[in-house]
Length: 134
Ligand code: HEC
Image 1 (tube, rainbow, N blue to C red):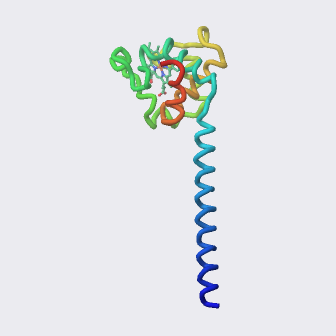
Image 2: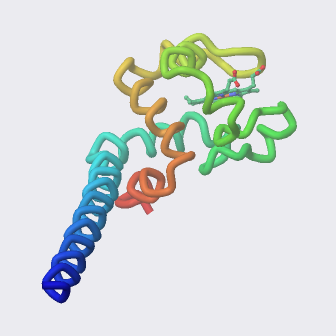
Image 3: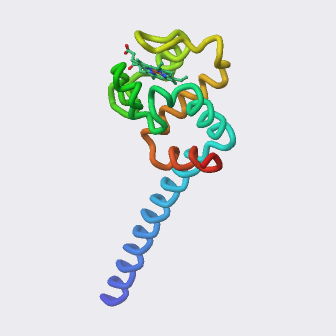
């Protein structure tokens, strides 16, 4: 009887363990899947490199020229805490020494750039975005 109870206990514990394990796995998988941006991200990476990297650097930290203009690090909390709408507006209208891009970048591209800026903060997104362009 007692042995039976212990066995049940053991089984119960392993079921809980498995549940937690699979729950964690699911969370991790969905994180990676969500990070899988598809072809759009490659386009945004290319757009960022041609239009933005000269000032912001490929990784958003700021190029030599950018630093002389006091560009903020795009990975920093100051920039990351801005909403998607604010980021899109800054890209579209410019700000301070930052030129306006509304005539040279489409709305879709702006959207892609916002995602790209977010990805600088997210290692899996960032690595995904780099794939195919390197
Ligand atoms: C000619 C250099 C230059 C280029 C090219 C440039 N930027 Fe900037 N960017 C700046 C400067 C300078 C600032 C700082 C503006 C300020 O706060 O006065 C800035 C700021 C920003 C900010 C942060 C604004 C804030 O409020 O903190 C974002 C986001 C940004 N740029 C995105 C982009 C994107 C995306 C592109 C490409 C489409 C781009 N920039 C191209 C110079 C540039």
